[in-house]
Length: 385
Image (cartoon, rainbow, N blue to C red):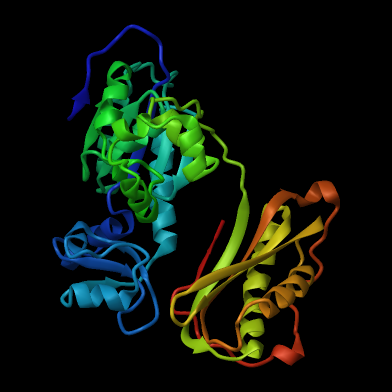
């Protein structure tokens, strides 16, 4: 277990970031012994239009990663095994893991099904040591789910997340406060959470290859080249991260999208598909008692180019008819129809509690006879927030 630095007496927050190792793929390998030790891809079929939802570590050695087209994955590893996603199972396992977290602290901030922040500054079991708590959590997860998790322990969320990725898979890394700045200075810029390939290449061109390079840039210069996020880069290069672990995260948006087995070529087909997505979205809004002001349409053309079109309304809505009226307008602002479409998505943002506004859900399914044509079956539907 890597430990950066020596313990000091000053009081700091004790934060753990737990990240399950290749979560979806590991669940499949656990449940099907034939998959173990082999390159496994979870997601769409290599003969269809789907994408990779997750890849086992054996598959990652071939360059396969999430969001990659399944056809690309099979070219990289022809002997890879492809398994369909089982999101209900993943949610059940995630709930099982989260229950373990809550045995130690109520300050749990889930980021997704497979990762979460925990603030154990005041843990329920009186263990006091964040390192020991992280070790016990990983042991319990392995015992109860037969899955491995990596964890990072630090005094800030930024460092805890970096640490959890430092010794994957099945690792535990602790970064102590007094050595945080030195650790960040040596950290390659690609290891900074939130720095993707595009930002990494931009930084490298500007001579920023490590945390030390980033730290050498004054704030005005960072703002000039990176805009508002420049302040964030300035702070984390110095180990400054005041974000707290939030036990209940405020929902910012709710969305639903679908990749089609056959490209859609007419606006009638597209509106029919959008209607189905909106019906499902409206039902989710009803269950969650939410409404939103900003409606977004996502369109991915056959060549994978993706665009979004949005409109913000003066008041929050939650019914299918109101959303469809806006989405019809947004579709007309795209090249859909002139170009074939492989994916459509709808989203509602600027959310608020619909009960406070007296909104009702009177119409969740709209016939729209002018859009009655059949669209292709979904290869990999997803709905989320």
